Length: 588
Image (cartoon, rainbow, N blue to C red; front, side):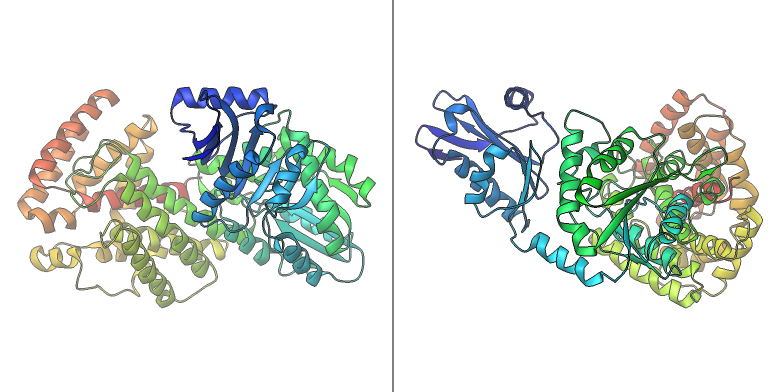
């Protein structure tokens, strides 16, 4: 808290309803609307009345407003300086601000530099070399001739993106692709999207994939894009984004024409195209919009891919519309989603779920979630390597690094070693099949897993290896070397024959797996007698054919018993993840 004469600056606790309501009303009175922010400061007068505010979202200063009574003197500077200090403490070195023209003098006095403007707003940044460095980089890519550009998110890249690039490339000497970079709310990361674009266009000789930046379709230049809504501010955001493009980026690349695909479904993107057609020709840049590619009677779009992934649709539906280079990335995200689906299933007997930690004192839902987040990029590496034909030894080396990263994220707790192995080996096998253009049938996937697994040797330091030595029952590697026989002959058919809802089906599938699996985790923790007893209990509960609400109650009761006896069917949890993954891979 800082005091300036009769005024005081302090944090506004937006989680407190009364404070948020006062803040929202103040913004509305000053022509702004309350949006998502990470941190918010308020300026209060001697009567404790809110007379000024400024907020931070990531590295973006926003929602800056002052009452007329506070606009004289240096109060605005003090408020923004306090916010900047906090931002720098958070590690944000280049701050950007999207604000009204009347605050331009305030930010210039704090060494901000204007990079774009419209009649209603200006965009500034604190790093004097930020935009100029990016412009210099673009200029280094410029080649002689008629140059065109496409700005695309490609989240992920579809056959529609490929179609647009191919047709645009035919109309220019050089085509530059600028990927949307400043977008955290994507299924596929920026680096993944760029990697896919570069792989997919490597054979098109006049296409260059540029690095992205915060200077085109970003949270700074075009926040409406990420809210996915058309509002009164949308046209202002679009105008600012296009001003920066026309003023700085297009000249750096020598762009004569900007290409885009038509937008039959997304109102926001359609409005962006309309404003491009209005504004860019006046700034010397032609705009050409191609009709969207259609397959199966509808337009091909990345949103369709993401919808299919969120609906847990089969891989075949997705493979029909994504580019070849995107396939391993899609499979990798499906693998991580299978782990998340298992984790979120609640309740589960003796296992970590969203309600409790089951029989585990060293892990919880959030630790397990961090573990999956740590593994997901490694699933991508494994998938790409297998798709490109890498040797099994290289895949195994990636798996070892993945496990190391997981253990670092969990501070030494083994959260997903078993799941990493079984889902990772299935992922690798599926990618090899897809790379050869083979159908992902259950039989084909099982055979491919056998081929993959036969190159592995049994490690001697795992719980599974200990259980094998002590009780003579097969472990994870033995199961893989059979092509996960039980998975394809029993667990997967059982899951697919269930008519119930998604969560109920998964509960029953878990019980079915528990009733059949020699779970090395239970064997290691509790011994053979308990492991056999768990099989019997799971089979009995499954066979009662209870409705969802009663099954949930019984599972919660079983969870309490397992916690008391330190029983954790961790192997069954891994196999449920694998079953869910295999279901999606092979469902037609």
